[in-house]
Image (cartoon, rainbow, N blue to C red):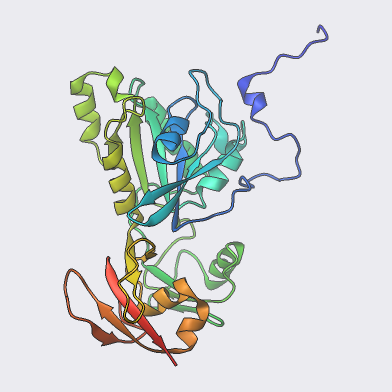
Length: 324
């Protein structure tokens, strides 16, 4: 063979060394109140969506493989800060290590929500192939979230209200340790499997400006689907609303004595969170020195009421915390 090298796009995505190991994600620090990963084949509009929704510029072009690493951006929604990750385009066979597929899917597994970016001008085969790749690495798509609750504590253990026939406590402890959750209280109310972790996804069809109204209407009526045009900025506000809805978070506003609530910097928590969760979200010492809290709900109870650590908070609640 002549002394020249021909680089394919897939070769450009291969790691330059083996030091990272198979299945190691990109080194992007998790920040904000939640993480959303953009995943899809090359040149479907992931970088353009990131640029449109955040203040981050991710390189985009008409050719494939313009993004070669994970690019983070911050999506601000009513005071909440959501980390949006633009991941490199994956290729068929990514779950087996082709391209930089293992790094892409390993990073996607750390997300609270996955957006599968699809090209509305292409066939449904692209969606099927992506779902096969994600399912192969244990990302279960659009299944009911398991009834498992955990709280970080100085000590703790695993409490189950049903027998576990599909996994065991040792496996669960190993999984928790892999997420650096060594001290926590885990309540399991359902016979879960070890694969039931990330199970929420939105299919986002981009480039709807290039298809007919009939095609767009058909796609928009599918479950877990949003249709957009990054180029024209169509339906992006609705997509952002759907992201927030699927993340299943609540915003809790804090209030100092004699001051107005801080509506610009809410504490964002999972639905079902308590006043103790609010304390830990502000500073760990608050729960230890807690006396009581005054809770005020703008939706259900307009008058402040005295509550304890176990009181459940709702979206847009206002909480004042008093310590010893």
